[in-house]
Structures are given as C-alpha cells and as structure tokens.
Length: 380
Image 1: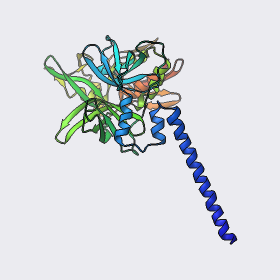
Image 2 (image 1 turned 180 degrees about the vertical axis):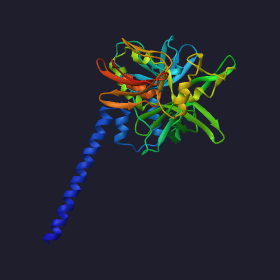
Image 3 (image 1 turned 90 degrees about the horizontal axis):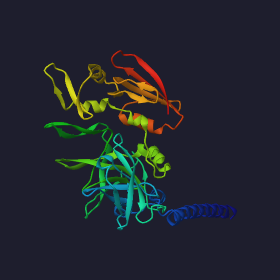
Image 4 (image 1 turned 90 degrees about the vertical axis):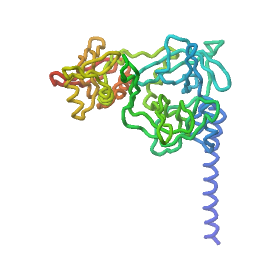
C-alpha cells in the first residue's frame, strides 16, 4: 500500500505542477491581451489559435491608406504604438502633404521622417488631425524576416473584396531584380533590388506578414506568369535598427551624411545595368546610371568577371575631411571590432546607419586603376 500511495503522491505533484504552469501561461496571455492591446506581435507570439482570416483582420487594423497629393494613393503599415507607418519609398512625393486613413475611418495627418532609395523604404509619422501634440496609441506590428521554420504567411491586399490571402512559395530570390523605364525611347534600368522576397497570392497584395504578428515585406512589384501572379516584396528585417533611430528622434527627420555621399553600385546591380547597355563604334559600353549614360570602367568589368564582390564608387565619398576617391571598390567595413564583407549595397548602407556619433568605421577599398588597397578610418 505504501508503494501505491507513493505513486499517487508523485502523480498529484506532477498534476499540480502542470496546472501551475498552465495558470502562469494563461495569466501571461491574459496580461498581454488586457494590458498590451496594441502589441499584436506579443499577443500572437504567446497565443495563436486564430485562422488566417482572423489574423489578417488584425493586420488590416495596422494598415493605412495614404493620400499623398491629389492623385497618389498607396499603403503603409504601422510599426510603432505612437504611429509610424512603413511604406515603399518610390511611392512617396516629398513635396506633398500626407493624410492616412485607417480601416475604421479615422484620419491622421502625416509627416515624412525618413525616405531612402537604398532601402526603398520610407517612414511617415502620424499625428492627430485636431491635436498634433496628442500622444497616439495605435495597434502595431514588429519587423521580421522569412524563417526556415515558418511556412505560414499572410498577404494583405488593397482591393475591396478578399483582401486577406494565404501567401504561398515564400522565399528570398537571392538575385537582383530590376524594374525598367524608357529614356529617349530606350529601355533602361529604373531601380534594382537585391535579396527580394518572392511569393504568390490569389489576390492583390501590398504587404506580406507571418502569423506571429510581424511584417515581413512590402510589395513593390509583380509579374504575371503562366502559373499565376508572382509578387516581389522588400525585406524589412534589416531595417529594425534604423527604425529604432527614427523613432528616437520623436518626429524629426533622420538624415545620414555618409549615406547621402554614397554614389555607385554593387556587382549584382552592375550585372543588371549591363543588361541594358549601348555600345559606341569604338566598342566601349555605356550604362544608364544615376540619370546619365556612363562609360564602363574596364577594371570594373574585369573585377565583375572574376566573381568578386564589392561596392564601386562612381563619385567621391566625402565625409568631413575624409575622401574615398571615385573609381574605388569598397570591399569591407570594420565596425565595433567586427569586419563585414560588402556583397550588396545594403550591407554597406546598413552599417553606415548603424554607426553612432563619435564611433569609428574602418573602410577597406581598392583603387581600380592602380590596384592599391587602402584602409581609411571615418569618425562619425
């Protein structure tokens, strides 16, 4: 009898522990649902037995229709409780005023606090229509990337019917994708994006989300194929650090003189420009870059053909008294005692935005004419 009683005592203890754990868990869930009503990411990360339709309705609550001028209308997603809309930069007209319309009909004034073509992302700060000093408290999501452990994604569209769809075949493309335009009757590259997210959706899409309360990407283009429509989205996970800097400025615009001094292209972008060249009678190729036809440096051709990576400067990178001359290939940056190889433009841009005042960046570059490699330090 003592043995049997001992077993029941052990089972009782295990049962009590399980009940205690469940009570703690549901207490945490209840806390977030009652006190963190705007934090969709925290709520869905703790407890998510919702259907795609129900989660999609939460995402509609953080999505806003943006009116920028008389005719321009596009969409943004709120990524902070105080009202910061993340949207696609090439939609934005900086010379016009902004109005943002929520799903429930509330209208906000908007002010552009960030716009960068390197990310192709812009941030619009929302303000109460009647009282610009009022602190907003709005539902929001966080930023995340495509996860190898998550195969469930939701696409939110701008059409009046069937706005919520399950996104399928979601993955990084791992290649540069270019959009073209016409210049003097010739197709030229208008914009290039590397490591875009590609996915399929039955309906129109302006945003890609996972089911844990995170924005994964903003749609900037699509292509119709024989198998259906493929969408291309700008990944937003690398933008998290820059977003925190924008929010810390409390409505002031984030500017970065180092980034503004950066003119050139990485080798993946160069490959796209080479797809739309013009050739002179002398056999010299020109590419349309930065609004003009430019002769391609033979050394850049050789560097690209060798399969090496880096960022090529078409103009001097000038910051304070430091100058990295045009015709140089930036290959790596050392920041906080870590060395980062520069493969694509965003590798470099993100590091320049990360660096804080009084911190030092060490940039390693090669002069493409002489082959000389140089290290230079930049004090931010």
